[in-house]
Length: 125
Image 1: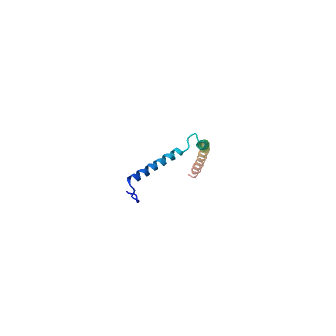
Image 2: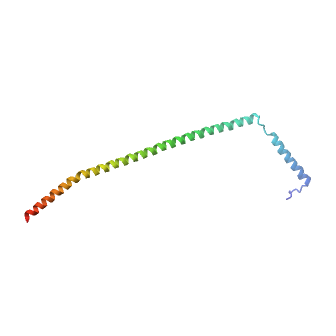
């Protein structure tokens, strides 16, 4: 594709060389690693990196503490459930013992009632 001003090959070649030269000069004009500005920027980046690492460490510690507290809560709930199960078992056994204690009295009462019924029936015959 041609440029609108229809320049010749030599014009395009010279403009390309000038652009390369400008790019090279711009690259050479950049400050070196021992430049005070570059050292300051490097120090700022390192300070940001250290601060980020400190924040990450704090977050990790907070996360570990939250996990520890969650584990303690989970263990507490498990222990409460175990104690509730033991209480239900004790209550069930107490109910069974109460029923077992009433059984002889019921049997005796039924035997007395049966005997009374038989005695009342024998008297009528």
